[in-house]
Amino acid sequence: MDIYTTSSPSSSSQQEKKRKRDGVFGPMHLTIFLTCVWATTILYGEMLSYWVPLSTCSWPHLSPSSSSSSDDHHFKIAVVADPQIMDSTTHGFPRKSFILELLQFYTDLYMRRAFHSSILPFKPDEILFLGDQFDGGPYLSDEEWQESMSRFKHIFGLNEQTRNSYIPIHYLSGNHDIGYSAYYTQHPEVITRYEKEFGKRNYNFTVGKVEFIVIDAQTLDGPKEGRETSSSWDFIQSFSEANQNPRVLLTHIPLYRPDNTPCGQHRSSPIINQRVYRSGFDQGITYQNYLSKESSELLLSKIKPVLVLSGHDHDQCTFIHSTSSGPVTEHTLGTVSWQQGNLYPSFMLLSVLSGNASSVSNDDLNHSVSSQLCHLPFQTHIYIWYLCQALVTIVVLTTWPTNGFSSSGYVGKFFEFIKNAWHNFTATVKEKNDEEDCEYEMVWDAEGTMHLIKKAASKVNSSNVDTRTVARGNAVSRPTARKHQQEVTVEMGNQTLLEDPKLPSGKSKVIRCIQRLVRVVKLVVVIAAVNVPLYMMLLFKDWIER
Image 1: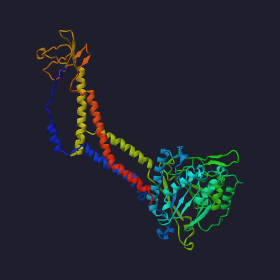
Image 2 (image 1 turned 30 degrees about the vertical axis):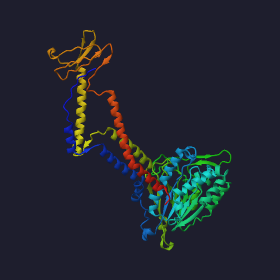
Image 3 (image 1 turned 60 degrees about the vertical axis):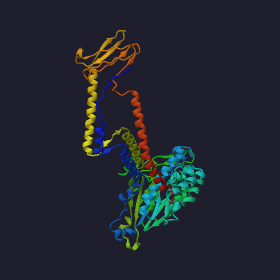
Image 4 (image 1 turned 90 degrees about the vertical axis):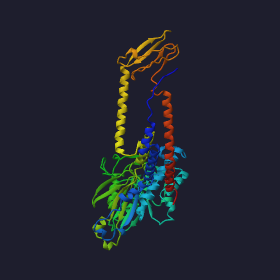
């Protein structure tokens, strides 16, 4: 079958000269640009973002009168809450499964980076953990518990303390460490296991002129005749109400507050109201959000703290308790992990008054502790950013013209690109309208075969058309004097359709799509060849022990 076509004069030489004259931003230039963008993104997401708290957060100042001595002499405490390192009880994934190992790695890596890059650079004098070091602590076997303990030490650099300057660390027990009263009364070994690694659950220590009192909150609302409950309340009763130094109460479970109480501007999740569940046998606690009202009031009246710090809620909350000795502020600190339901992990900086008692007034004692909430990188947002940038990269590489864009006059070329796109669109619409306006003429040859002749709507002089007929099985081609006249030949016997040869065939479209796909894959490989090693280097740089 013979098709006669005409082609316009080629302007490739002129286009080549223009490309040489104007700098062209082609696919390879685009690949280099995207490689640099990805390198910058990875450096920020995996390293620089952890340095942001160093510039946005600082040690809080005490009251002006108490700062007569330099702030350098104030004791500095970094506070961390609810690491809850992930294990098989977190999401129900089988132990040693790939998905669990992957989640554990990225969760542990985040907290290790946060601790070493965002918290330790503040050079705290002491570090305080507000409980829930583990997630499924009371339910883990001894082997799993030891594995979690090894990961905890690795995350927070406890194995590296001997190589660096020693920083005292204080721990609170949480419900995810020993459970509530309904559980640990039936399994006292979980308390023994906890105390072997983290020490006593009820104790006090002094920093500067401030006394910190640590309470095992999980035991306070347990059975009154229970051993652990009695032990905790005996410890609380041992403190004299006529204390000379200010006190800070530390409890994992927050004190009682009324339902729907506002928590302040730093709260990012809905308010959680009081829930208390008890077992049906010994009335032991199986879960509670806050301590009971009676236990909270007794704690405040007996200890008379100037500040209360708590965790457990995984989100920030600031509440002021009314007591007989005046208002007492409680800060509930959010989790330090990005996998525990809070999109905005955080830690807290405490400045504590130092100096001799004789040089400190009573007013200064009431303002002896100052706190500052600091946010860590929003890891979930960073991963969403990676995903969106990956999609944009694929789209740009796929749609970028093979000949590229001119690099001179970006703004002018941008508008030129828009103009050309609009011109192509209007030309396509015009061509479609021309097709709709054309007419078809039926012609039979001597053998009885019908041919459809596609012609323009305007009348064409028959003298300008030289009609030739061919034998059955061949296409009929008629030269025309007008460039708009086109021909479509349909042979009814063989059901053959010949269209305008200028339109690309389906096969050529597939070939071009495959070529474009191969090009995109090659360019993605180039981008990955630079950035994947960079990403892996940053991962293991922070993972290995220092």
